[in-house]
Image 1 (cartoon, chains in turn cyan, red):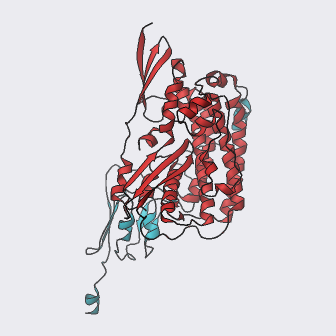
Image 2: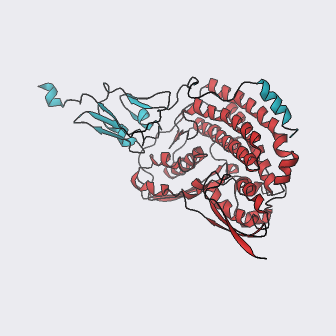
Image 3: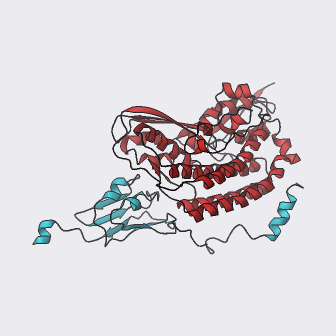
Length: 120
Length: 359
């Protein structure tokens, strides 16, 4: 016990190691792999993110222009963000808040027009 | 005298993960131990059937929450060997830095849990406070706290700039100072020694015969560490395995305590020598038909990956032998003859990672 005493005394004069989370939060580090988001305007619905995703949480419908993510399946590895050719996927610096309902993130954009349609 | 069977686990305050031990006790002395496993089997090995070999990296990272970096590194090294991919030197050094940070956070977690197993809760808190600094380094450099997901086939996914490397080294200086302060409390304290010295003695011959690995083996005086193979950049760094002679719970604790300091030293060396250049080689095609074995030293010991490919993007078989699987026979050999009250301390002394074992 006496060997711990210097530590105990030091702890009394140093800062607290904990904080009153969630009322008190710290600045997130840069490059944190937080919640997944998409800039749907830039998306071409190529489907590479859905193909590369190791969990299969993403699905892309090129005809309808839909990008769907199941945040309860996503493991926030960032593979989709790295593989996106248009760089329209991004990860926030904060983690997703807990939720009590299983809801998917559905984003609808403008599907790319076929060459023939574009020409006419 | 009449014997009684007392079950310990799968839910027990001292066990972080579910293992069930049926202890046959005569009076208060254990005479026989029968383990049963399989409470958290997830069938991760079979996921290779419907994922391509790149996606399996994220699967093997989830075999173990504590040593995810080493699992991914072991798998990637196996595939790289099969495909003949030359990993850039910078990636090798970065792998060493992150894997040793992982070893540190795993050992600090264990040192805390071990202190908790004999009821020293304030020491447990102190170790976990230090561990938080290592997790902060993980989060700042990789983006995640525990499952860092930095490995990819051919190299690493994240890079460190000079400022970050400098910051890691300076943070680890503080960690080293704080860990050293706790050393006398953990290793020389009278009450701690009463609970650990001479409890669960494993002789060096027993350790070799039972196929023990990692700190459990090294605490019995056998200097065997997979890092001696020199995988990643470890061959270019100065490193000696930490050993102790006694083979009891105290020796296993001391080995892990010293390994935290040894890891800091390895990271410091790697930080000084990290060369510039690419962080990942380009990998195309599928692993050729054939099989390979890959071994890496995890915090708990040697992890063993057997990979079999049929020449397609989806692997044919992946087999993982984790260190705890190799250490359970040793646990069954050291428990008989001890008092029932020693069981939590001795079970924790081998650092069991059950979810890892059951995959």
